[in-house]
Structures are given as C-alpha cells and as structure tokens.
Image (cartoon, rainbow, N blue to C red; front, side):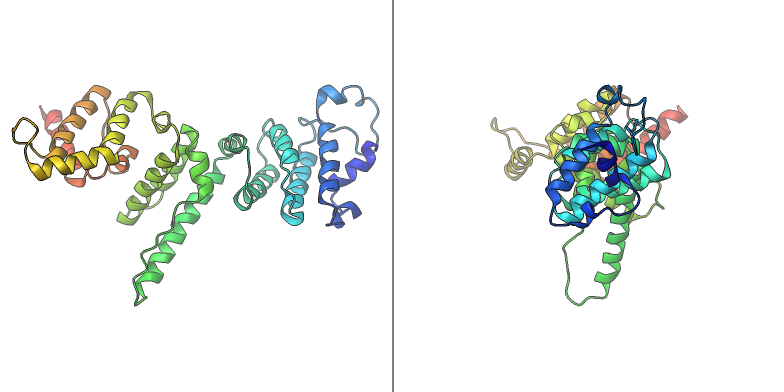
Length: 312
C-alpha cells in the first residue's frame, strides 16, 4: 500500500475507509502504517520525491499531525476500538511540537478519550498535561463549578443528600504522578476567589491526590518531606487508634499520666517547621494532610508567634 492511499486517512474529507465503521481494526492498522512513516529514520530516503501527501516530518507538518491525532481519537471513540498503540505513537511525536491552537484542541480530544476509555499509558498522558497545563486547570475548574451547583441544589431539597462530588479521576491519576501537575492543580484553586467553600475543596483535592499517589513524599519540595512524613504518620489509622487508647486510659504503661496527643503533635510540628524553614498558611497542601492537628487555632497561633518574632 503506497503513501498516497495511507495519506487519505489524514485528509480533511471523510474517506470511505473511515465510513466503514465495522472495520475498526483495519482503520487502526492503516493509521499505524501511516504513523510509522512519520519516523525520520525510516523515511529519510523517501523525502526527495513527494508522492501524494508524501512523508510527513513532525517538525514541518504539525497541522497534518494534529489531523491524524483527531482521526485516531475519532476511531477510538466512534468505532469502540481499544487499541491505543497509534494514539501513543502520535502523542510521542506531538510532544516535540510547539503549542498551537490546533494542537491544544487535539489535546482536549485526547483527554476526552482518556476520560471515557481506559488509557494505559498515564506517564505519557502526564507529559501531555505538563506541556499543556490548561487541561488539568479546566478539569479542576469544572469540578469546582459542579460542586457549587450541587451545593445550591442540595439547599432546596427536603432530604439530606450527603454524597459529595469526588475530584475527577483523570486529575487524581496525573497530579499524583508529578510534582508539577500537583502544583498546577493547587494554583488553579488559589486563583479562584477565596471562600470557606474553596478552602474546603482545596484541602479535599490535595487529600485525594496524596492518598492516590504511590509516593506522596515526592510531590513536595525536598525541604518539606520530613514534615510531610510526620503528618502522614499522624493521620495513619494505627497512630489514631493508639492515640485514642492512650487518651482513654490517661496513663501509659508505666503508670504516668499522658497529655493531649494532639498538643504533643503540634509541638513536634513547630520544631519541624523551624528546621525546614516552612511557613504554614490556610491554602497550604501541608494543612490538608492532617487538619485534625493543623486546625485554624494552631495556624493562628503560628501567625501570632511570627508577628511577635518580627517585632522583636
């Protein structure tokens, strides 16, 4: 099959092959052959003579690459094909391109595919989101609007619906993998008008991302990881159970009285804050890790101590 026939898939008009919706595997196979022709090493000998659409160079024909990306997404969505080999190959080429409005629209379509289907290569998808952070920003803002709309709806209901909107799965999957996307998700909410509800959503989002991550320590700067490790320990089920038992008995194994576990934890947090040179504020991901200990009263006390030290 020559490049002219394969290139018909990338043309603006709908080719009969694409109209045959009962041939998803054949369409995907044709796309795969055409995408393979994009590799410069394979096609270096064919560039001298253009044949029809010719061999496409990712650096020179970004528009055609976007067309192919759109066609590949349409094939997956319309035909129900779950073979993501072509899409992954195309995304790898598109990551080398400069952002353009057309590429941004194609990335949005890829995100639609990832949300509706089980996209296997989340690391590649995270690279796409890092190249175009508005993908994550849009998902977070949509989630905020859904939560706001749900709250307004619930106020008019006789029955109390306690089910809350969870953060989008795609946001949890990607932001739990890289510190950059974790920061992007936070910055979006910091840019929204500050209200108690936004603070609640911010802490809920951070909490879900940290729980979803297999290595939550690496989402934070290196100077904060010791404090993060301690806060994650404070929220562990084992620690909470032991704390409740000690507070219930009010005495330790040696018969000595035991103080408030949360107060002891707050003193340890104070020491770690000084050692790591970190300042806590309400919109800080650290507060979301253990709000039981880092409550509003504790944050205000830290603020008062900083003001006194500045005066001295």
